[in-house]
Amino acid sequence: MRKLFQKIHLWLSIPFGLIITLTCFSGAMLVFEDEITLLVNQDIYYVDQTGEQHLPADSLIRIAEKELPAEIQITGITFFPDAERTCLISTSKSKRSALAVDPYTGEIKGMQERLPFFSTMFGLHRWLLDSRPDGEGIFWGKIIVGTSTLLFVIILVSGIIIWWPRTMRNLKNRLCIKTSAGWRRFWYDLHVAGGMYALIVLLALALTGLTWSFSWYRTGFYKLFGAESQKQSTTQTTNKEKQGKEQQKPARQTADYSHAQKILERMRTTYSDYRQITITPNTASVSLKQPGNQKATDRYTYNSNNGQIIQANKYAETARSGKLKGWIYTIHVGSWGGLTTRVITFLLSLFGASLPLTGYYLWIRKHIRKR
Image (cartoon, helix red, strand yellow):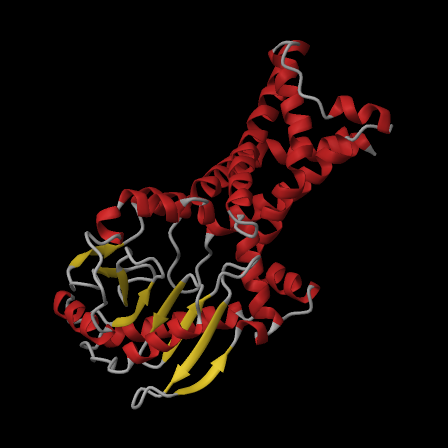
């Protein structure tokens, strides 16, 4: 049986090893994207001097409208608990596009956009820098990454079956990485023992990552936890909406943010500890500091005419499918346990990128010795 798994492990690793390396490496680079972005662009995300009170939210919206082209819509405004942070006025230009504004003076600090390095890493991680096809074309980059990730799961499991010792007495030796027995033994121990140490985390990253690759896997994964995936229908609706917007290209319609400040103050009074508060013309979203779910959010709908709360959708009352989506994301990016688990995820993702390389080395070295 072990010989069979040895062949499976080898002949899946050889053609897909480099893709697995690229996927793991690019994933590691994305772990601390937010922190690095804030550090590199401090002049955009932080104010020069704090004041006693923010300008009203609707005033900040009007200031931003004067700076944006007429075809770009304002979709919301986000505030942070840190007094030194600028507020972000999101736009219809792209998902991450937002105008950073000093909330005390109204000064436009700049446009928030993803750094080119992280855009490249994200494209590499998700679809090998392939371009999304128009219409119903095959997204080959996404399929290749998804297939490689699925095979990575099989490679990890087969590796454990191959190298797990027959007796528990030998387990201690198998889990040791010797540094004084030559380079070949060091790379062998790093590949085998290191793979055993990293198995659980790498499996968690791969199994959660597959939910973004295949709809059939996502549906089965959700059903396994007693939930129903709604991403497919949402994606189709979003694509239709985008096509409609591209065809119409309407001029900006100024939304009513006259009660945004009232809603903001109410949210700040209600929540003493939060990640951020986002106000749109008729909704307010409070991102919670919920352990284990980075996407935990309380959402409110309010009457734009008088600012009265109409409906409250609390995270605690969210359907299991909504919570599961946040859990999957939080586990995949390693933030479920705070900074410690993110550092572990970063390091083990880098180690996952090295596994195919050490495997190639051992395989090539073995063939050279035979010759």
